[in-house]
Length: 351
Image 1 (cartoon, rainbow, N blue to C red):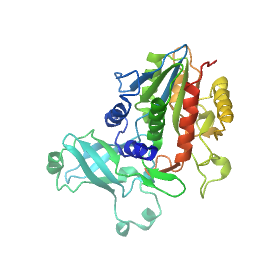
Image 2 (spheres, one colour):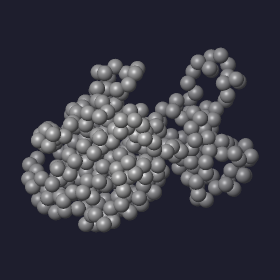
Image 3 (spheres, rainbow, N blue to C red):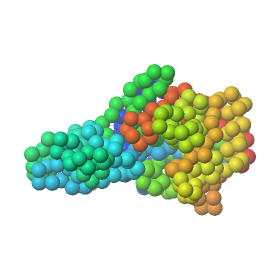
Image 4 (cartoon, rainbow, N blue to C red):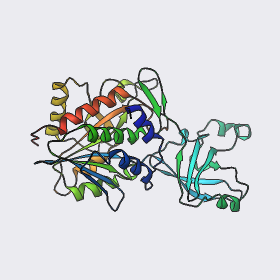
């Protein structure tokens, strides 16, 4: 299976926070003949192990995607929802969704009051998510329940992955199914000289929960998170706001966190970051250096485990993150796979 097909398979799977099992099953099937062993912990993290040696390396990619969850069903059979993760209201309206019920997938569409019935002041405002609802075609609360809908059912967006020009692709859940794709390929292609824990984490989008638990139990010598980062190389964003660009290589992180202070995030371990940079330059793999305001990754949880773990992040530049129509360059993906393979195949790692 090629890189495009694998990313498509993972991207189109459903797995909002707390409901990642479908994605985990796909990854297990891909890796069953390529790792020494794998297991699932009590929180749902899928942990794989490959190789042996003096150092233990944890590479994390999270399986969950931002999405929704059923909050209420009204008497007419319309569904209200809550958010799982950071979803902007404006990307939701008119989207097709899949409600994952005990009776199977149930399709619907997110609606709101039509523009013809809005007051003039309402037309000028963004519709907030609590004014939206999901229409599944039910005529009543009883019929909706008969279809299988219950409060607490997870909801994902119904989006297919498509090919754009210049080796760009567009789809949902690249954050972080592209990381899962990369980690799967690294585990398949590499012959590690040290012990590699490939950890596919859960519930990253709601507080780095899977990484917190798995890093504590493994307690590796070092950790790397593979994720996406914002690439705003498009209109309406100044270059200094988001200088990372598609097609110029993966982004090696210096620091991330809150926009006002970079608090709550990660300052990458200097030795580990320099090792990755030196390796990329030695192999002539293009890369970018990043300071990212406005978010963080599993590496933040890994770094603060037990007595502290040297950690870094390498990300794939991605346009329109958390929009359900994200865009990335497959060249960046392949270059990050090459860099991580070279990293885990090193004899000596001095941190």
